[in-house]
Image 1 (cartoon, helix red, strand yellow):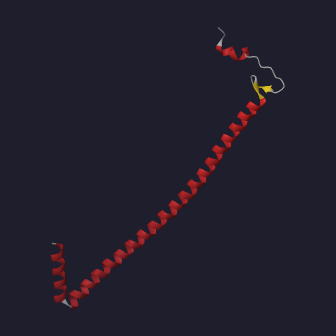
Image 2 (tube, helix red, strand yellow):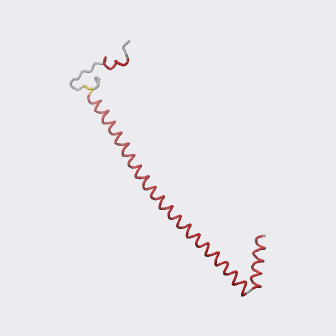
Image 3 (tube, one colour):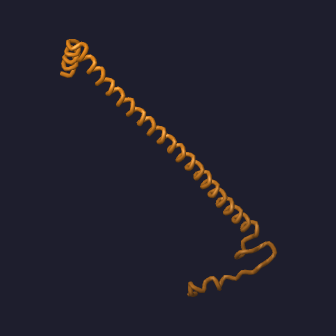
Length: 113
């Protein structure tokens, strides 16, 4: 039984016209090389396209997050303004029209119950 570490030495490789790599015809070896090269190129192309799509998507997401943060800030400011106007209106109503202010308060309390 031959030694597995020296098995490669037992293979006879004879260069000849039209045959290379352990007796395979040259067109088979070149075909494998071409196929392997094409697969590598296709994988690199897919990776590049994927990186571009990821970059565009991350930029779009960042823009959407910034836009959403601005919208939230504007909504919070508008809510504060509405609350301030509500307090002002209630104060003006209670000073100028005390009976109407009490009626409005009673109506709001009845709706809450």
